[in-house]
Amino acid sequence: MVPRYARPEMTAIWSAENRFRIWFEIEAHATDALAELGVVPKDAAKALWDWWATNPAIDVPAIDAIEAVTKHDVIAFLTWVAENVGDQARFMHQGMTSSDVLDTCLAVQLAQSADILLADLDALLAAIRKRAHEHKLTPTIGRSHGIHAEPVTFGLKLAQAYAEFDRCKTRLIAARADIATCAISGAVGTFANIDPRVEEHVAAKLGLSVEPVSTQVIPRDRHAMFFATLGVIAGSIERLAVEVRHLQRTEVLEAEEYFSPGQKGSSAMPHKRNPILTENLTGLARMVRSAVVPALENVALWHERDISHSSVERFIGPDATITLDFALGRLTGVIDKLLVYPERMQKNLDRMGGLVHSQRVLLALTQAGASREESYVLVQRNAMKVWESDGALSLLELLKADADVSAKLSADELTALFDLGYHLKHVDTIFARVFGE
Image (cartoon, rainbow, N blue to C red; front, top):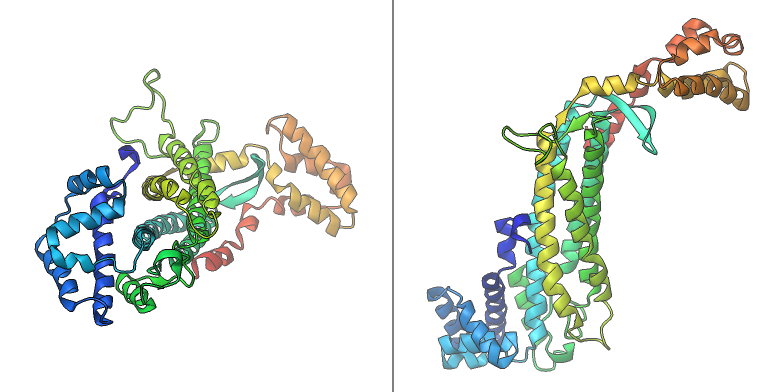
């Protein structure tokens, strides 16, 4: 985790203090259930909670010092608790194995992380929705292969992004449900030394579901899906970030990142206004996606269980969620403050002498009796003249002067085919599909 790209709320989830607090809750809730089943004295569970209520501070250095000797993090934690609670602590961890604590804790942390990320997505969706409606009917050029195609609106560009991130939210909700799984099943997952009702109790207390077959560890296909979902969200962030970067290019300049007073774009060139935020988002997205392959590789363990996944998850758990949280927050700010230039959009629309209306002429010629092949030739031979003139010539005027075209379509009919509004007539329909209006 790099502090430059981290926010406090998400970072706190992955702190040692939070991890140990979750460990304690798992152990104490399990001891409660064991006490209700008559396996351990009720005083044992009460002793744990009484100590916790009066001594909430986690002495991380003390636990680390014990681990330096034991070389086992869970045993170090249990030893530290026992040193503070006293004799009653011997009933803690009855019938459990380390993975019961570690895997259930990771499930809690990932669920907590998902909750923050879902809130991030809600904020981003709200920003995109607002700007989409603001520019619902702002004409701009639609591009394919980076080349002018046909007119769209800037609102439609943003509506597409809204729909994409709405899908991301749906996927993350499903991934959260899949990962929020509890395993308190003991060594090799057979419940030989602990009743399944203990697992059910702990799961209910922590807001988790019960893992049907834990095999000691929770199957890592769940984690693979979770991190793959984060990777897809990162891909969507990059897609929108790259679009902003393209729109900010000097030759396009239809939109750009907000440039604050006093901000500097280049140490050498005072005129520069660079898309640094969206370039940064492209890089952050790559880092989030880098967690996906290791998560997929974690699925295959030796027989049913080993800990080859453990070291990987100590990296990708905090790194991917913290980075994605920061990236979503940054993208929300970019969209919220994005500078949009409708006049430049119109100028770019008009730049190529009306070429963007070529398809309408092609279709009108077929309706007027020309074959599609003939119609294509008639329009293209005039369009190429406009293209080669870099937009200095007018496609409409060339078509009017073309005897083969004018034999099929009158001047008024041709003029009508160059109506920009024609391309925007279904904007309301698309917005209703996306925003439910």
